[in-house]
Structures are given as C-alpha cells and as structure tokens.
Length: 174
Image (tube, rainbow, N blue to C red):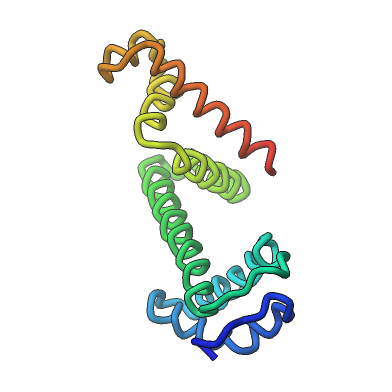
C-alpha cells in the first residue's frame, strides 16, 4: 500500500494499521533504542492527529510512507537536538561540586526550559538569533551590537522586533 493513495476521509487508524510497522522499521534504522523507536512512532501519529492536514477531507496523502517519514524525520531532528542540549547541561552540571547540584526536580525543570529556549532560538534566522543573544545574554546595547556585527542600528532594531515577535508567538501558542 506504500504507493497507493490514502484517502483523507478514511480514519487515521487505517494509516496506522497499514504503515505503523513500516514506520517502526524505518525508525529502527536510525535509532538504537527500541523504547525510543516506540515513542517516536507514537509521537508521529499523535502529530498527525493534531495536525490540520488530517482534518481536511479534500486532501489526500498520495505517498503515505513519505508523509510518515517526513513527520518522523522532524521528530528525530528534535530528539537529537534535545539530546545534545541534555548532554551539554549534564556536562556543565558535572563541572560543579556535587553538593551544589540542584535537586532532580530542579534539574528536570531546567532541562525542559533549556530545550524550550533551544527550540525558540532554532526558529530564528542566524543573524536575528545572534543579535538577540548579544542583547539578552551579553547585555550589549543596540549600538554596540550594530558596531560588532557591522550592521545598521535600524537592522538591529528590526532583528530584535522579529525575535521578540517570535518569542511572543511561541508563548501565546502554548
């Protein structure tokens, strides 16, 4: 059924029944953790259920496996990026004396926050992200940022407006 048309009016369960095993096999080739394969396969179908694509009865999925691998591929990218953030956080934590480590609950909350910040920053164009970080983390003024990046003050203001709009949109969506 991989080349067959998938009628959007059919229940998503049909997509699941016909392609779930294939999706898990596809994920197994990219991950070495069976539990993570199960989680990502599950998350792929959850993403489909939440998407507007499935809600539109006028659309059809011509290549269901390509559709699934595109969604799962995005989830894989997020998974590996989140794992990199977690690794960096744990490395930073390891540099602290054990007595100064936050509680497990605080560590989990901090990691969740770091992943959200990473996701937020990933949605910005590189120059906008760099401008935003220079302002918010390094505390540079807009004039200092303009001089450092060799861009106009107006560009810095525009980049910051884009960054703040992006932050607002993500917070409002949650």
